[in-house]
Image (tube, rainbow, N blue to C red):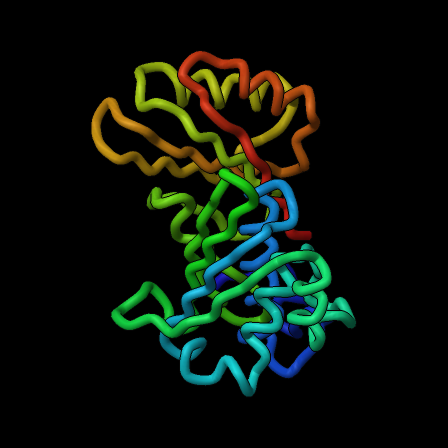
Length: 221
């Protein structure tokens, strides 16, 4: 396994007890919160594997709910996340899932506010590090190490090139890019991890491109 830096090996500053079951879980919750763009009103969290077996003792459920409230992994409010969620008007359902997933520490998070809803499927792979495998039903994700631009668009010729050109034209370097699509010519989602945070001007430029439907940013650091 490759690590971003020495702190990924030592472990993150966090509310314990486990970097994989709490710090990583909080980051998964924050990813869903950032895709939604607001505090959710309702959320369903489905835990798999080790997450499902040990979440109560390790506080995985608390960490994910804290992340949905945009709490960082070291936020002292995580132990009271359910009370904080109630105060924020967020109703949460935690359930255990069955079946094989890409990693033993895996969660699927559905979050909604009003008519808008998002979903994230991802794993906590150790040391607070995560891997997002699925966004809004598309097999596309990111590592969470760097700012990631998530673009929902139609699967048309030239769309990816236009997105990459807009990002490069704004002076950002793409370190990783992945596209998931529902089928040829259907809906698609592209995630581009960049070396630095995109500004609002770039996000507006991407949103204005032909065949682009929505743009969001995941920035967990």
